[in-house]
Amino acid sequence: MTVTVRFAPSPTGRIHIGNARTALFNWLFALNNKGRFIQRFDDTDIARSKQEFADAILYDLHWLGIFPDATEYQSRRFEIYDAAVERLKAAGVLYACYETPEELDLRRKVRRTRGLPPVYGREALALTHEQVAEYHADGRRPHWRLLLPNFTGDALQPERTEVHWNDLVRGEETVDLASLSDPVLVREDGTYLYTLPSVVDDIEMGVSHVIRGDDHVTNTGVQIALFKALRAEPPVFGHHNLLTTVSGEGLSKRTGALSIESLREDGIEPMAVASLAVLVGTSENVAAAHDLTELAGHFDPAATSKSSAKFDPDELFVLNRVLLHHMPFDEARDRLMVLGISGEQAEPFWLAVRGNLDRLADAASWWRILREGARDRPEFSDDDREFLGQAFDLLPEEPWNGTVWKDWTGKIREATGRKGKGLFMPLRLALTGLPSGPELADLLPLMGREGTLARRP
Image: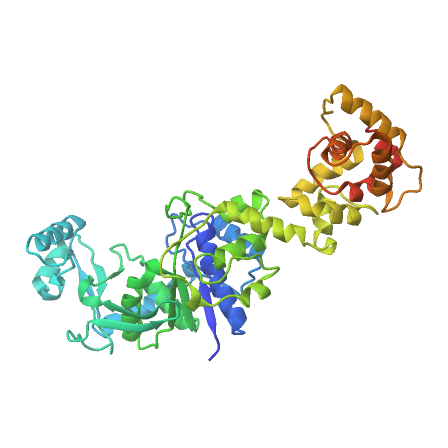
C-alpha cells in the first residue's frame, strides 16, 4: 500500500503552530514511509475562504520545509460531492429534514427534561408525503442527514452502534454512535458541511492515513460510518494531542496566536519551530534537529501523549540559539548578504559571532560594531581611562594574526598588574560598547590595528 496523507486546513486565516504540528506529523509520516503528501484546502465556505490565505499557508509550509506532492481545492470539486450525495440518497441513508433551528432547539430541551440525550430523534423519517408537500408549499427547503449507524450502506442496524478503530497515536478507540445525532451533510441552501467533502476526497485521492488533532476523535466515528455508506474502506486514523498556550488557552487562526508568520517575523528559524512543534508533548526529548530528515528519525506518532501539550515560545529561542550556534557559513551566506554582510571577512565574522546570536538578524548589529564601533561610547572611571590609555599604547604592530589578543593582553597584564575582569571588561567596553559578546580574540583580527585604535577612549 502506498502511504498517502493530507493536510486540509480551511483558508480562513494564517496557520498557527498547532496547525503546523498537524502538517508536520503528516509530512514526517510520509517521509518515513516514502509516501505522498497532499495539500488540500477545505474552502467550501466561499464567503470566508480567501485565496490570499491559501497562498500564505503554502508559503508557511514551504518555509518549514514542506513541499506538497499535490495541491487541491475542494471548491473545484462540487460535481464529485453532488454525485456522492445522489449515491447516498439512492442507498436510502441520506434523508431530508425540514425542522427549523428553533424547532430543533426546542426538541433538544424536551429530551433533556425527559433524561434523554439531546440528539436528533429522527422525526423526519416518519414524515408523510402530505407533510413533505406542505413543507414545500410553505417554502421550506430540506437539510440532509446521514442515517447512523450504517456500516453496510443498505440498512439501519441498531444493534451495531459502536465504531472501533486502532488509532495510530492513541491505540484502540471507540465511539458510540447512539450518543450522536445523525449528522447534517447538506445544508438547506445546498452547501456542504465539512464531513462529506472530506470523506469523499479521502476516497477519491486514495488517502491511506488521516493524521489530525484529537478534537476530531468523535468525528471519526461518524466519518467511518460515511466511508462504509459509500462502500469504501476507511483509512488508518491517528489523532495527536493539541497544543495550547502556556496559560492553557487553545490556538486559533482567527486570533493569530503563535502564527507561523509571526514566529518567522520574530526571527525564529524554521527548524526551531518544527522541532518544538513535533517533539513537545511526546516521550522524545525536545532538541533542535538540523533538518526535517533528521527530525523524522525522532518522530513516532505512538510516542505522543494523550493529554494536551503547552507550547512555550521561550523554548523556541533556546532551540534557535542552538541552531545558529552550529550553523555552517554556507547555510548562512545568502541571508547574511541580505543584511549587507559580505566579502572576505564574512565567513570569519560569522564563525566569530554565531555563538552569541539569538536571531540571525542580530549579526547585523555585530557587523556594524565591527566596522564602525559602538554607537554609544561607554563612560569610564578615571582609573579605567588611565588603564585603557596604557593598554592602547601597548597595541602590537601589524601584521596581526590569531594570537594578537593573547599577545596584547599579556603585555597589558605585565605593564599594569591588572588581570581577570578588571583587565578584560574595560577592553571589551572600549572595543564593542557592550559588556558581553563574541570572543575578542576572534574579533580583533577582523577590526585590524587601525580599527582597534579608533576605539581608544
